[in-house]
Length: 194
Image 1: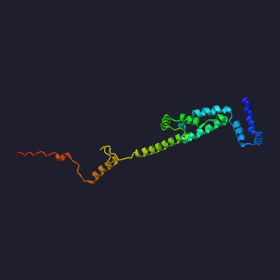
Image 2: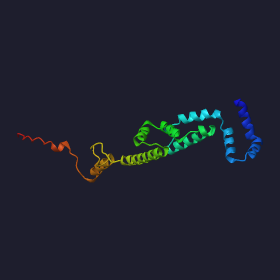
Image 3: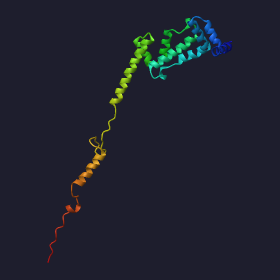
């Protein structure tokens, strides 16, 4: 029976019968509801409900993107349902909370948020504060490369500067290298007996 409905609905959507049926309906709202029922059949309801129950914030870059996807899935579920069975905002808020990380769920409980709008504004504020904090944290911990001399184990100069200084000292002064022979005294001459 469901296959027959599916085949019939695709024939209606693809064919001229759709135009004729829409022309027969005088009320626009009723025509839209009929179109929704044809486009979103009840067999799709389980798929959308499953997606709605498995959606998680961690898959989205921001809370607003997560919220927009929830609204999109809610609209698809509601298109498959009758007006009296549609998802209310309270149940959407439960799906919203369920998809959040545990820390965010605790924050919403502490703040006693009762609507999605309150929760969304609170979580976006936390997100902005966290972004500002991370930017400051990375800027303050930037590594500034200082010169370091391995020989003297100090940061007042680098190895290259140290070697260059030693070279210039050797070239700049005409210093004599100490020769051992300078320090050896010559033996006293032996007075010869003549």
